[in-house]
Picture 1 (cartoon, rainbow, N blue to C red):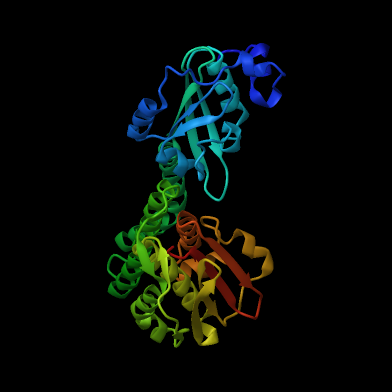
Picture 2 (spheres, rainbow, N blue to C red):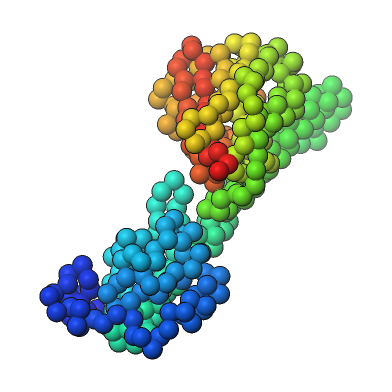
Length: 366
């Protein structure tokens, strides 16, 4: 970015001198707003026209969606609170060359943008076009994470498979009973690798699109009933009953497949680790403008010190127990990122000896 002259910053409205109105005239009258509006609204990327005093004169619908407010008629600093962007606009308004500024918006979902600022002539304002770089950066991070995680987590089952093969080809070459046992162990390790790769790919896809909110309509009550039916066989094997608190339709904005994945992961975990309580409850309700779904088990619970880390990828309370039950350590990470994508919240309440309750809140369909 080229250096900004001190005189430019003194001209910017939040440090305005008494005669700044004369120094920085508004958008020149020869730039007709009606014509400029046609151009702005034809752009697919978020775009704004700012006058010489920093007021947003025009903004397209894409800009209003990204900024989560219609900035037209407001000062630019009311919707973009990034000093580097504001300085670039001030410089462009004063006649500087076109400038690009990359910045991040941190919240439950990290988003990355590039603001491309072009002057419309000295004192006549600036055009600001925002480019969303989130997906590009997510793809790059997804590649790096997938390679790092896969190479680390696949090493153990691959070593086990190699050892079993050596035994079958060596000491157990003529021992049919040993071969059958080792082949069964090899099958379990191969299944573990398949589950791990499936979960890694699923998590990567979700993270790549986490900044894009789904737009469908989903009834959480139907999702809960579907998951109960799908996992009925597992519940019988665990001698555990899955119960649903009956409510009417609970329609949210979201992706049905992803919300099924969330509820299924939570109920599977409850059956795997809390089936000693003999029942799992799925409760549904409304809290303000949010739909709430909670999955509660009555098993041994989770020690308090583990709760803050449960949604970290590959974090396990008991590594050996998790692997023995077929866990990959990615289920709750997937749940967290899907809930974030739906602009919802995940909460966990548990105490040793008192069971666990995992709750999600998703905005109701307006």
